[in-house]
Amino acid sequence: MKRSSRVRLCATATVSVLSLALITGCSGGDSADSAESKDSGAAATAQTAKAATKAELDKLIVATGDVPGYTVKAADEAADIPADGLKLSDEKCRPLADVLSGQAPGDAAAMTNRSATGAKPAASAPAGLDDLSEEEIEGSLALSMDVDVTVVSLSSYEGDAAEQTLKSVSDAISACAAGFTMTADGTSQKVTKVAAEKASGAGDEAVAFSVTAPMGEADGETSTLHGEVVRNGNVLSGYYTVNLGAMMTGKAYDVPDALVTAQSAKLK
Image (cartoon, rainbow, N blue to C red; front, side):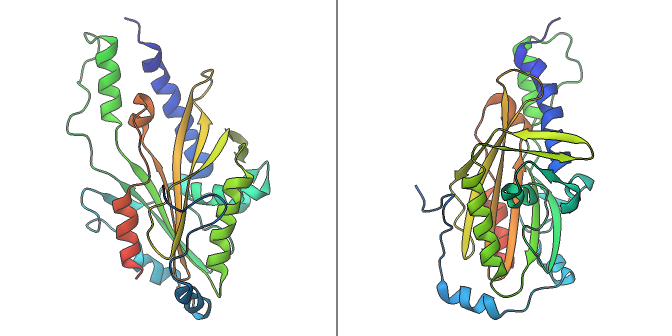
């Protein structure tokens, strides 16, 4: 039995996206040029606030039970690549690479991260695939992988460094629009496009973006990951989300608003 081209691409896409994750960690007003700020008074307060310690951030980061349907656990080793272990073709793009690696962008005083997995699909792929049609195989595989997986990071900063770091992320979205290449442990992953997206509107200000990368060696096939950074005072929360099932079917997905909202609520 031969599989359809999209089913064959499933394995390729999975390997490609996991490779990217391994290298990098696994009509609003927001744009690549500027982050929408809600409260200039809060910004002034942030400049005098003391940076939270890692122990304090560990208490503030989302946990299982904070977001209905989500399971939160320690981020795996794919989200623990140190900044100096990640080489970039253009250093202007490092703030984006930091977010996509689950690390703190800029010069943070402390940081922590977690992996948040959405609810599993109601049905999963059948045990035997030999008697299924190509379309049934494709649908079963896509359904089994239709899960949002988000790496969440919290980082604290001294003075106005959180504001300046968020601006560096926003600037990088514009500067790296044509893409860049990341290399870790001798393995490279090319990003072919970076685009600004509508941010959640959480926190004091926020920016959101997507990165597009080739799906393995398949000509013309690409996959898209989504990221967002939100500032609450002098703490930045970073998010990047992958949904392999949505990538297979072309279904739209994004950084989950419920997750961003719950995290921002814990930082108020």
